[in-house]
Length: 380
Image (cartoon, rainbow, N blue to C red):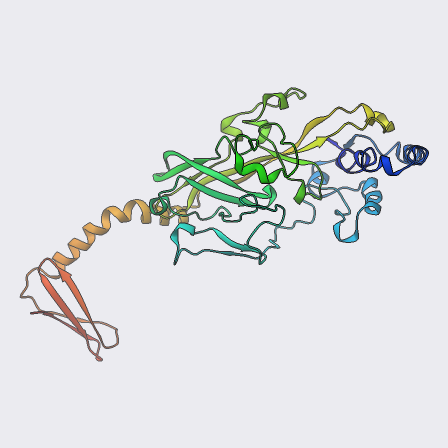
């Protein structure tokens, strides 16, 4: 497959062509530097690179990565290879603490801290650096909170994502609420003031994009929904084959309102590169590369259906239980205490203690004796 050379288009040559470097270098020094790079890297510094799917995901060697290490401090250098899932082996390297709902059910499933921090370090102000969100497994029950908004956090998003209740749906016989992101999620600060802290001193990008460079080694990486779904139509014009589709590209969750467990859901996002034209870099026609938002890949994370054991427990707890529990309870009371004058003798493996039962036929008291016999007698 053919990919844009990320480092070339987003890190190195735009940096050389920037207003920050040019005023500090004499023109002859800059021309000498560019000429040397042109000779040394002409065959390897091309705007696009051919890689296999495995190399794209798990890493491939790029000669410019080695060169880039000279421009970054040791503690801030990118990985030695280029790869979308480089250095990830399925192990979580974060320590998160979450609310259990014991004291505050309206925060059930939400995170309290990540690696000891009560905020996201990439953003300076709230609500952008807020971490009060679910990681996707549990949400505050809507039947308790009465709120139409929940939040989900994904490390790759560099932010929490709001989800708004839309309607009630059924999934395999289980009632759930359908949640999708509000239309203002990736809007400018003029439309959605909550997004202002994502762009301090920076012009907001077109509708449907968000700059996430602070958590991508300051590379100009922009987040959107797949195929620029629900974004500015102008973003589609330079490309062929992009066809936004709500069914395929919308993020959504189906959350059971009583226990806050999702029965189906997907987070779908697209990673894009902001490519700026570098008119002073003549290597391999890079100076002719236009300004554009270049889509690199889109990611889908989620679950389509529950495993049978989990579905069974959720179905029993939310559908069968509320209907049959009162019936079973009433039947047991009638069966065990058919008339107030009955005397029941059973053998129970219990230590000595007392308990009271209350029913339609009067109050009853059980004495659990040390010899494990229980005598039920009418309480006067």
